[in-house]
Length: 142
Length: 142
DNA sequence: ACTGAAAAATACCTGGC
DNA sequence: GCCAGGTATTTTTCAGT
Image (tube, rainbow over the protein chains, first blue to last red):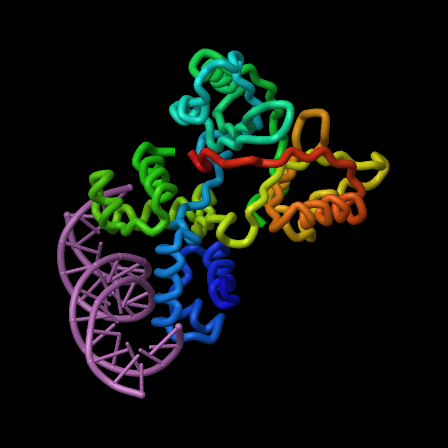
């Protein structure tokens, strides 16, 4: 990947609504050139899209946790990620090389909702869990 | 938070560049009303901004890991998050209620870079670490 | 690949309900 | 708090180098 593309990408991570004119000034290119590069990065898939950054605490899900999940029955076809996808509150699913098979990030409204979520994980995805609650988030997405 | 705001927020998480007209059609409001609501959510801080979604594998950092970090000397003033912030590759820092004090998400280019990063964590943030490598990411952000 | 300029779409603001 | 309309920016396309 070229240096100009990388810089454009960094700027777009900082501000996903930066205009092509702004970006052009920052990297020393015309708006058209920037536009071309952005479109190409979208086509290539390096740039997947744009999203809103939400304050989850204010948005009704103040409780974040990480859940290590391991299938209870190893004979099951491993469609665990698919099953997890349907459970509300599960924000991300990583397959990891550790004690557990999966590491999940979850966001919920209350401790009760976390309890219900963990129960749902057992019932619907057939996994055992080990949960670590997030106390605070000094920072995210550096 | 009102229902209309929540729906607008969800749509903006899905597509951070959805136009106010689109959003308005989806929630049954005029473009002006949607525009007002979005501005208010930005002012209140619920909506923190917008960012590009990057394919980190393609963007030169194919290796993701989670690092549990615990201060080596508990007498230190706890400015660990600040110190971590300056280390390249550390993407997020969570203070957690678990065996470790902090859980970090890191993204690097190679196993060698991960080794260097962990060394930097020990040297510059004075923490012991336990690392879990991510093998794949079935999905992220809901 | 980049530029510059025109055309289309969108964001943003103001007044009125 | 919502809507409608007007103006300013921005996005998008295109011909030229």
